[in-house]
Length: 249
Image (cartoon, rainbow, N blue to C red; front, top):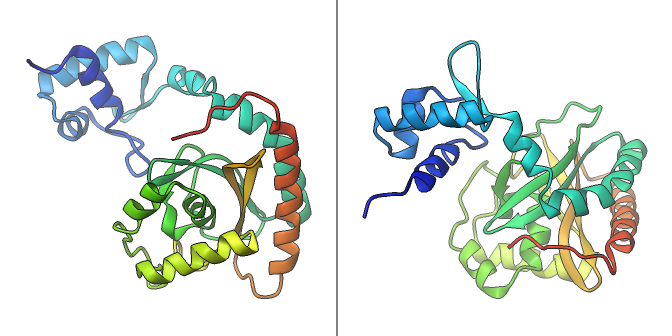
């Protein structure tokens, strides 16, 4: 039995990712594995509905209607709303880039980001996904992930910069320290010139998210940043406690 119309439409939407935010019709067909004629017909329907938008160049991007639907997801409307005032307080106190992220499978899903004043190379965007082992928020989430998730992640330690930790034993020791000390750090593991520190956000006893800051250097300000992060994370946790919350898988 051939692929259903729904699966073909989803394949077209799945062709977009953090590195492919704008695609031509030909690229959409190639990345989705669909014949060009089929892609042309479905892209037209998706565009008409608002799932895709067309740029002046002729390329397609994700449409506003999908963005509006995405805002209805519990991870957005619940966690993001609860965290918003604490993220702004944290940003105001540090003037650094602030991240709120959850685990989505074996990746970090960024659900909020406030850009800092200091020029630091930051590759994350709201809605983007990055490897857990190379980010501060990711190491926090990996430290508290189920054993099977951690085992699978340890088999996928790709090198992104010269400083990315790709040795399973070394990463496991870092994750042990995250659980013991309550925070994770990275040093230019995702982007050269960018360091990060992150802490867990708990709903009761369950870690449901990670809160992080990206700065050029951690050596002189680590204690201050950890303290600020923990105060914000505790505030978010108090807001979440007792409220319905759907945790990302």
